[in-house]
Length: 110
Length: 113
Image 1: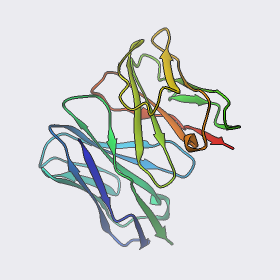
Image 2: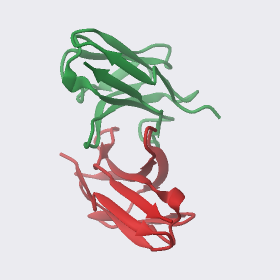
Image 3: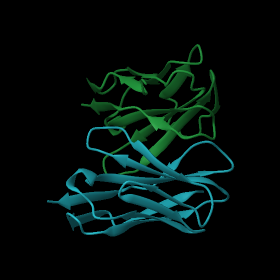
């Protein structure tokens, strides 16, 4: 059974203080690893898909990386508007559903 | 363009009543998914549609839960004889194919009293 574990559960950073969020996964065969952002009271917003170890993708202050066991979401010089819950999910080659972690709640303090 | 829409946005019901939740996917998306997000838990897969067929219903928690999709578009998730443990946010997502990126709607917040 696919499993996704995210750490830390919550992270508070000062504005401009860079850090990384971790997503560890176990999957029989990885089809893709997905990062989403979720604001309070809203649905998840798609950020990135990573397909193979060594792949990296960037969007503004965010960069996602992938190894065979984990993914990192690096946040560089964050701003208060980056505050949200960041969700990681995997899709295995056997089916179309996503298996999600419980998320990291990120707070950026001005 | 228009994203995934869901209605109602909030629903309060009494234990034992039936509820229907609606999802309108992105136009042209053939795949549609339902997930449930309970407080403090990750999103939990419920059911997947490809067109009007549901090849994966493995996440439906009990036979009180059912879903259908008509015309390859709108989907309805029905919960019969609601229980307090059914209280959660029900999220719908759609994609242009079974292996493509899933885009989520805003969710329906269900509270069973």
